[in-house]
Image (cartoon, rainbow, N blue to C red; front, side, top):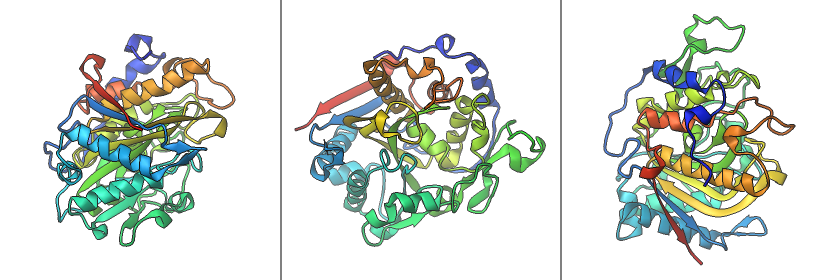
Length: 370
């Protein structure tokens, strides 16, 4: 699949990222359990493909529903739909769903995928009032249409009103849960705790007991790919633009795994569903239509590292098909301007124990429906 990466083959500068990630200081509390990352199915990824899931670039609700049902049963080994979801949630818990609106209107968490997830939670005994759909920026969330897609009673939450290029505001964030790293925007006081810290959204610390991560299959200029890990790291804390504030000052390789290692994120996120019905192979995270492709596959995992390595391979396979270099070896162009991308954040997350990086230990179960 073209993804036999080692740190020696990754781009210059990557060698410092593991030390940065391990030296990050975290203040965060949340009890660990058997569902904490990498969860009960370390190294297992289920990939369900349905050729009818996308017709004329439109999601088809019934094939997508079938994909999600089969994927959940295959991931868990459960005997039925409700049993599969009960492995992750219990009545009385408040369940969050982290969506991704950034590539709107072309590649975002789709309503046809979101609604069956809500139905699965309902089947497990979670009423709509205990389900909260979240993204960090309220205005982006609304513009993407998420509130209008939700069944009656499902709540929404955000941490901030809209995108801010510096993102040091702490309204909507919890001062007791943060990741501190010696990394700031230029011109800001390096001794300032606010400038050195990324605080977790109150959504994840106060409003929900568990989180379902609904991510999308996309290329990313600085991080290389934006899949399960980055949907969490750059969606659940503030002060994230310090990780890639210019096309040459890029620290995503260290920043992403350091944030996801926060106990309040690591221990509350119990399931990752990667919507790859459509994908983006270049120029991300905003989705230009010329780089959108039909993939017609949804991925399921409790292990975000194994999932992201698998999704990364899918993006590189498409890039090879159109004559582009692998993400890790790409060079800047007019659509993707960062000098050194850092998809090694996936490998570093594995080194931090968030999941399985070793391809020999990753079991991808591929299922074709229809």
